[in-house]
Length: 300
Image (cartoon, rainbow, N blue to C red):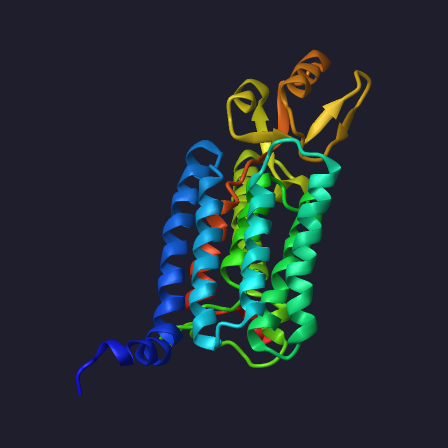
């Protein structure tokens, strides 16, 4: 029997959406995130267009999936809420308190109302994780747990793009369990967890370098020693500052020029530094790993 105009929607719902939609979404995100990782490695800067692309593609594919699950108004409301979230994180200009209140209030309403009316709907349950982890990543950024604005925007855009785990063909190999576990360990949270694991390879490099140079102590896992002139020209952060009387440990600074000047005046020639790890690179590797191999947290 041939395919006619009238049975294309049924074919679309039964064949294309379940496998092809998550596969295409995953591939598009990988391409964009790969470009972002390359930019982060080369310049330690990532243009916001990457996060806009991931978020908008995610919203578009959410709407495609919505047609498969019944095209309810709740799904479109959540898509609008996700759009406002992307607008919020990409709008860097100053804005009034009234505008901010309108943005956050709209996000709250667009996600709360669907949950009130359809709390048991699978799509609604998945969509509800978007504002929760959007708020969580903003708090992590404000607390300094996500170091750069690009890191926070990356995690939020991945949350918008993947309220569901991408499941296609026989991937991920570990499988995604039923129940609430995938809503607790959502895809973006799994990506962040595995990216942090991948980042630990930097600690191994630090240890090897310190052993080679004869440096010992607790700091050998967090950084290494470098000539101050070389440090000023390298992608590293100083680990110490001085008040002119003593050295003291500092968190990762926003600006380093004045710190290097004070350290030089204090008489320091070799200083402890910690490398600026291009975090989008382990995030890119983590998305590949979680999407294809699976979330190791599901084995716990």
